[in-house]
Amino acid sequence: MTKIKFGTDGWRAIIAKEYTTENVARVAYATAKWIKEKTDNHSAVVGYDCRFGGELFTETTISVLISQGIKVYTSEGFVSTPMVSLSTLKHQAYAGIVITASHNPPSYNGYKIKAHYGGPAIQDEIDAVEANIPKEYACDIIPFEELKSSPLVELIDMEQEYIDHVHSNFDIDAIRNSGIKFGYDAMYGAGQNVVRRLLPEAYLMHATYNPSFMGQAPEPIARNLKPFAEHIANSDISCGLATDGDADRIGLFDENGDFVDSHHIILLLIRYLVEFKGVKGNVYTSFSCTSKIKNLCNHYGIEHHVTKIGFKYICKEMIENQSLLGGEESGGIAVSTHIPERDGIWMGLILWEYMAKTNKTLNQLIEEVYEITGSFAMDRYDLHVPEEQKWAIIEKCKNQDYESFDTYTVSGNETIDGYKFLLGNDDWVMIRPSGTEPLLRVYAQAASTEEVIKILDATKATILA
Image (cartoon, rainbow, N blue to C red; front, side, top):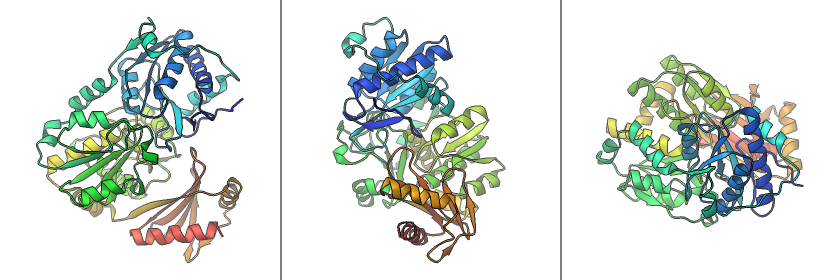
């Protein structure tokens, strides 16, 4: 029996190894049992992204759900995670289920659970599902064509519902008629059709169905987007947007083809929503985000709170409090003018509207933010180390054994989620084991990119010595 454990964002496993129809059926049964224990609203929205076996694992999930009396709303073809979350809210379903492994390598698939409010289920609910997972569960898998005729299955158009929601919340004409050239790298993911329909003039890259992702993990970080960056640098594109496999994470490039990280994106979003849209509320960001966010929030007189890493922790705060924005270093950002869910395309559209309305470049807007917060740089290393060594390093962090990293002396520690070492001058380095992948993440903040790399190199050399 495979022990199934949800990480910071769903259950993920290698297809045909741990991720099988038998194990998906076990999780689907646990989800159905959880729904029936929690509510009389026995309903769920189910969708899948562009990964291998998406339709098969969706058939498995729906077959189990309807066998347990759960009404299912679903779409034909792939959809993004934000589409499932939005449709869960719009159709007043109790849960949303997305068959996706997000940004993981192509060999993975996964299972995300969304709640009735249109965002990730909180930890207590995930724990309840995990507790219900049986050692085995057998169920006949019904082909999708037959499922469509079931009285418990209702076909909806999640993509169209999402597009209608975009048009209700954005000045798409202003973006299209701005004279600004935009580009989009779908990374072969589930956002490709939406952007093509919303902005047909935009330049599109990797916007075809290819579940192999050409061997590249569809995570929108700089090293995975080099062809896109090179194209932008040699074209008239003023801003490039990229999203991950299920389109809930954002990556961004300026007019020079330089990567703009999520820390800067969060700052830009806060400024636009507060100054131009008049939106108020608290800001919630994960432990690995830049401390400059607090500076900007102080400037506007709004509260800033730091959460553990994992968007489910941010979502919990957003649905329980008056919020403006919730965001994490990995590119998952939500705003109160949408749903409490990460949405890479939605964040990109806000920034493109910002540029269109102000007729300014991304770098000009960033410089205006720097006038308030001061300039800074962020980066991270992902270190693939043996499990034994990884946890030995974490034990040293826990015991505060690291007093310096080469010439960088530790002046203080923070341990909300992971281990952050304060280095003075608003510089810091943070060490944390990944919650979804077998690696150690090392983050750093400093005044310049050169200094960030020096800190990361010094930290790497120290902990791996």
